[in-house]
Image (cartoon, one colour):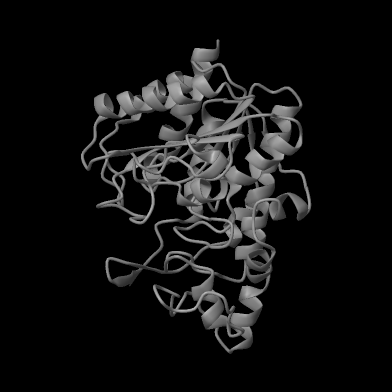
Length: 345
């Protein structure tokens, strides 16, 4: 399986995030991608290629132009205010505050375009997220060129980023950009299978009213887990998209036996949809030792996860999302890919 990877991810290294009521070192760090790449190479998964350049237009097919311009200029605005530390939001436009006026000050813009304080912006953030999106688009192009599968080793991740806001370590939605690129290049139907522990609220938001993209997500119950405000089972899509969004929330402590049932149900939804291509948001923060998650999957379980996905028989792009048990992230992510390949053999 081909892997697409860019060293540019190291340009984004946030120093702190607001979590559990205090500023703490970011769980989302460069070593995450480094460990996955090392494992890809150690097992001989296949060739590792750099991303190609696709320009801004494919990004703007998914994301609001004002939001993209904000990401491009945020660090310059922040540093122009005399600040050299990471940029984080100060205030959010919650209920009954106005959202029809976009602030001009950087502190207001950060709150307007963020859902939480887990998205620090640094001097290198835009280049890192830009290249991460190019990694995903390169993977999509490989599928269109006839590859049966590819692995986009994206960092920063993307599935919490919606059309016009960032959050949860995510700035541009790599998986959604890849999906739209597949559609624009001729795929009539594309499915997303999100196996990250946290609900991919951004991906759901982007495709919620569309019937050409099925989004199926298995994740922690939002009643007690981030992102709290999306991810419930009754969110099935709206308008033309009704019936094309499927959430499978699971309780804290979920082990493989219960997870496998949800995965089988999600895969059945994908099978019924009969997509021309499948994009997997590959988060491995479902691992039992993950520091910010509450499922109890073991490393061998990821081989079985990959086998289930491979059994669908779809051209498949894996897009790296979460996973914060850094020592094991490479083993777990690559286990999914190897399990997939064994089912395809």
